[in-house]
Image 1: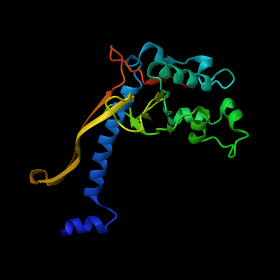
Image 2: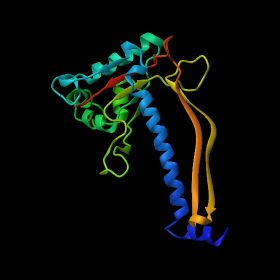
Image 3: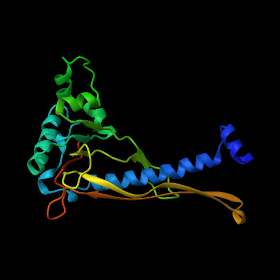
Image 4: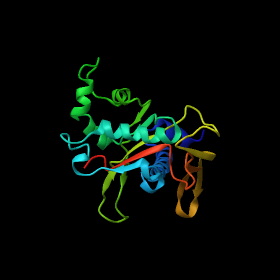
Length: 227
């Protein structure tokens, strides 16, 4: 170990480590952004597997909305296509915080053992094996403009059938194909008097359970779930 490397280990300030974490986080964020765009684009789904809520139907309208009914409709729509119910729900942080106080769910859980709303409890009420609550943020302003940030996943809910294992003849919402694990390079650029850190990976994202028009059939999209 060189003196510089030993210094990075011993000191709370480790420029090489921080740079590696920074560029790695950027790649991970870019990958999640690609997943989010693919999953929340209504045109990627067959006509019966997407809905856009508005006004009193949005879940933030507690008195008139029916989130349980909307989610059950989504499950039935997927089941009608692949004869399997979606077992995974992606409910963004903003949406989940609204559902936590929705009277329809509070009524369902008030006699339960915990009587405290949680993603796991929501999953048990509706029969989802996994509830994902993404809360990552992303910068939305152009370089040089006033910084602006927002939630990456916004207010759209995605239901998906995710098989317990991959298989050529098993319907699945989609797969990530990788052919190079994430690697990190470090080298010295003397003209700039700087060390450079590069992180790289190779992957492709594909919706795999699709119809003849290449539209998703193993998932259901609820756009604008809350106002």
